[in-house]
Image (cartoon, rainbow, N blue to C red; front, side, top):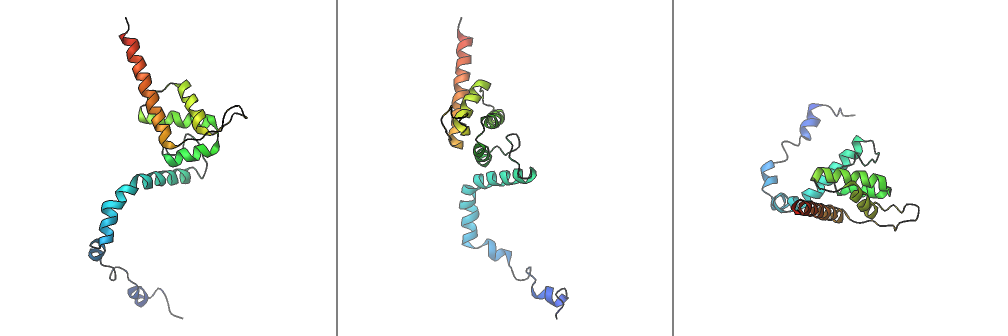
Amino acid sequence: MENITSDSWSNEYDLENKIDCNDLTNNWLYLIFTGYLLPLLSPKLRGFGKEALSVFRNMGRIDPNTVSMTEFGFDKIQELTDNKGMTEFIQRISDKHNFNVLPDQINEIAWSFSGDTNHGKNEHRQETWKKLLNELDRQSILNKMERSNRKNKP
């Protein structure tokens, strides 16, 4: 039986001598991937990576205060169909993006996005991540406009 740790084995399978980095980086597929495709994919890949790291850090436990504030974290919270959890998650998003949204408004928005039916009292609704960000931005703009109108009244 051959000793696999011998020098002859390691030299025979030495990858440093077999792969030329210049050939790899000059390949047209490499240039297309890094110059065109990677920038298109990178926000999704970063979000997925953040969520994977968050799940690993929390040992698989899904908690509104620990999931990543990305589309992947939003999907995890939405799967729980818990309005309280969605409310906490939306509060974190509002704080991160400096949305001017009141707690009562966050609670209302959460019902539309959590999928929680409150024991059949509410309609089962689940919306998308993009709609959540648009709704928070819309509500924030309305609140700022209302505040400026109150200041301008005599």
